[in-house]
Length: 337
Image 1: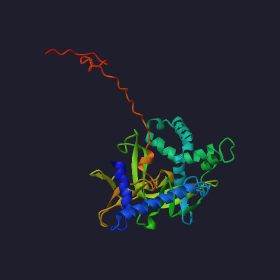
Image 2: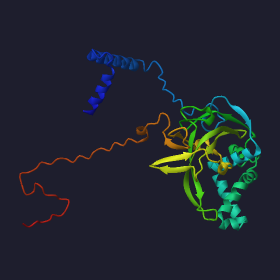
Image 3: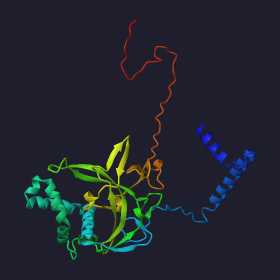
């Protein structure tokens, strides 16, 4: 009965005059049939344009690697420190740099014996020297590497562009100062991080850590031949700014940012959108709410697998009562009264 009940809901939606429900249903059904006939008749004569999702990543500029910016760009000049931190993060999170990261780590362990025993010192020296090392390893005039790799190793310009909005991965992100009711500035980032129990612990363990924050700036780094979008964020402190209560994640975004001064950036492609809700304006804690991108439907992500049922043929049953319920797939058990 479900298909019929579902169709009755469609027919009931046609009723506008409750004094004549049958007439409204007949009129709505006839209008639907006429539209369907005209659509099929004009299908081959007029192009049928599919609606474009407003949050779709339409490439408007070939220089931008991922996503597309919104609104008008504002030109800013990065300080040497800001440029260094942003460039270092880009190098550490680009897939094409993975072989060079492993090469640099092996070289540090071969040069300095302390790096073999102390992983904290190893990663500290790696983060400090990798940008300079890879620039010398891949010179700009080298013909053995791709153009993209050479300019990535060379580094970005000090002049960058900032935007108030950006669309990527089906999500529309805005900076915090836009103050929209939709709260498109909330982001979360799952990082594969090296963790340790204390400052004296030299043994790192890899684990996935979730960070929550809001977008402060949307920056397009100019690598001469292409542009890479990054988000500068304000993060909730992992120590005292994140907690779990009754199955909900709560964050405090008003704590000190001293722990994240060296790591405020993430790639735009790494950001996942979240929304924050709090009980009242006096509360410092926000409840994290995750939502799928616009146009996402759970049924569309599941593969439809039609498994045909194996129907066993029905054999004709004889009149022999002894063989009527005899199974041939296992040994029988004789039960004595």
